[in-house]
Amino acid sequence: MTGAVGFAGLDAGGVGLALRAAAHRPVRFVADDETDAAALTAAGATPVTTVDELAATCEVLVLGPPLLAGPRDLVDDAVMGSWRDIVVLDRSRCTPRSAVEAAAILAGRGVTLVDVALPGHLDHRGDDGELPVVVSGADAAGTTTAHKTLGLPGVRVIPAGGAGAARALDLLVTGLGVSTYLATLEVISMGLKFGLGTEVMADVVNKGSGRNTTSRTVLPALVAGEPVRTRSVGETRRAVDRFLGVAAESCVPTPAIAVAGSALRAAEQRLGAHAALDEIVAVRADSADADTRPQGSPAPEQRPASVGFIGLGAMGAALAERLLLTRPVTVFDVRPDAVGALERAGATVAASAADLARDSDVVMICVPTSQIVRSVLFGPDGIADSLRPGAVVIDHTTGDPAETVDLGARLAERGTALVDAPVSGGTRGAKAGTLAVICGGPEDEFARLRPVLAAISPNIVHCGRTGAGHAAKLVQNAIAACNRYLTLEAIAVACRAGADLGTIREAVVAGDAWNGGAERILDALPHDRPTTDFQIGLMVKDLRLAVQLGLGTGVPMPLTGLVQAQFQACVDEHGYTANLDVIARSVESSAGLRFRDYSTRPSPEPGQDRNDS
Image 1 (cartoon, rainbow, N blue to C red):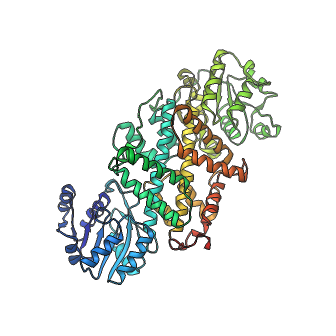
Image 2: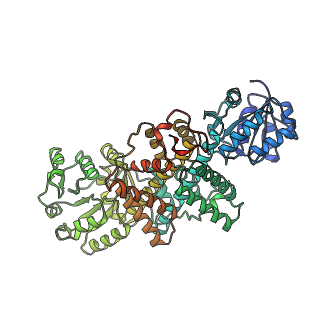
Image 3: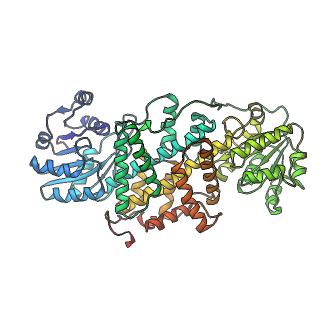
């Protein structure tokens, strides 16, 4: 393509596209911002005065949201300006239905409308990497022209199907990205009130399934005191409202994203529509008592500690097996059948938990709840009175920080230290030695135990005082659960609005909606494959503890609480031990669809009855 391309309505993403285009073909533009105009002129683009002048001299127009509130503005401009025989790439932030209607009207006037969206790149020009661009339209020749126009070095074109599909994906990325942003900051605020540092929480979350764009980019910026979101609260709220409108049209319930929309509305009333998005939550990026310096290699053990391990469920058995690679381990479980495999792997089986405690310098416990840990230590057959002088207890349970603090105090009275060290990464990570070990406890005891913990994994984070490890693990799991549920809600809406799972995956991975869970979910949904071996009942327990910790520290957690309620409904229906993936079946049931039906074929047009699949 050699004809000129015209750009108007230039936000940051539009400037990024125009700069890339100017390096390869004639570009004309209308820009109100002097800095943008200077950058484009320096790149060889030609400024003009009006959009009508662009329409008269260019084969293709790229029109952005500052110029257009929606396609209706475009229809009016095209009619008033008597545009003819031109392809318009429309980046206005509208609904899929509006895009479909405008395309039909303009086609009768010789104007081909193609939807173009820059998912997750509304705040910057994409100078630091590839700029993803989603393209869709009803006219094959028009979409071909769009591909030729935008097929530039540094631009990845994502084809999305018929008219309105790009709009649906743009709204998905905005709705999901903003919702995970708010959910993450909600949970991080709770961690800060408990005494965790922002930097250490980012480290923990990024080592686990809670990782997302916010944890990777926003939290480090908060630590550095840098602005992170230049979009205004009002603009963001309007985008989320459009997403919720599409969800309502498609009859897809989105209770969690609706809560995020309410939070934006409240923030807009409090801060004003023009406030920057990062003003919503005043997150203090202090370090608390967390040590986030690189830990390096553990100091060699002066004398290898004798290790006992109590609790040989799926995770406990995997941790014990990992330890056996480097040292003798004594094991105990109340279920005789649980110790057989460990005994065959070389472990010594203790006759009782008390016997194990008498023979161990370090006693590791991995059981489902803190209440069971309390019973192991102080119950009728508890080991507290059998522990060696100077022994250390390591609690690998994902537990209640308040319980952990109390248990630590009771053990300290007996001269025994408690280090909470929940792990993140699943049984596969335990067997491979790639887990994150998230620790809380006295600094000197942590240093003494690092060689033992390093036998499990080198990825060790010390989060602070006793209970801090459990609090940080709750932060990680709560964010992961919110990521999962919000992703499923957004996917359901996008499917109903005309997108398929493959295109959704490309848009999500490329933009601000990215999270670690989304990639696994979108890879698994077309085939109904499991994404985890985690029990949904355990996740409900973790969400309950996180919300309780929020209440105890005075941090409202409406998004996390809503996700907890949705997961609890799944437990009520499917049982405590059901796989966490049943939450996808719940979202499918509410939306009246099966995700695997949207793996490749086009989905129904926006507004089509949801029970037709």
